[in-house]
Length: 111
Ligand code: SF4
Ligand code: SF4
Image (tube, rainbow, N blue to C red):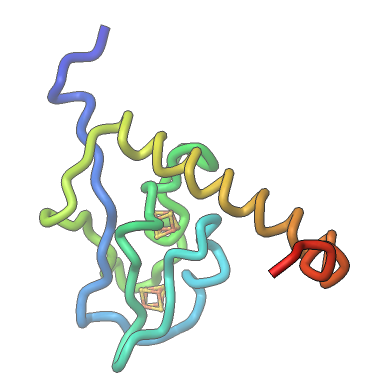
């Protein structure tokens, strides 16, 4: 059984070594990467370290300058990362359902 030390995970962050090469953004399964003021940034509320999707963080795999370390301000347990993944997946599913129903369902709802 893994101990607490093995259980640690955390969101990742992009440092100012980023060269804005654009390759990481489309690889993120959680849409956590976005263009910030000067360089790309990672929304820690959406980054699960790719838990739930891949064994390895996809952005780290593709970054040519290795500028995506873990974010020490967002230390989370693997369990929390899983919960985040589940929450994001549920939100995505709800969004997709809403998009499928389209304006009809909005019109059907009073108020
Ligand atoms: Fe997105 Fe995964 Fe990178 Fe987090 S680790 S920013 S979820 S690609
Ligand atoms: Fe920046 Fe690395 Fe993403 Fe390229 S892959 S945009 S260098 S963080």
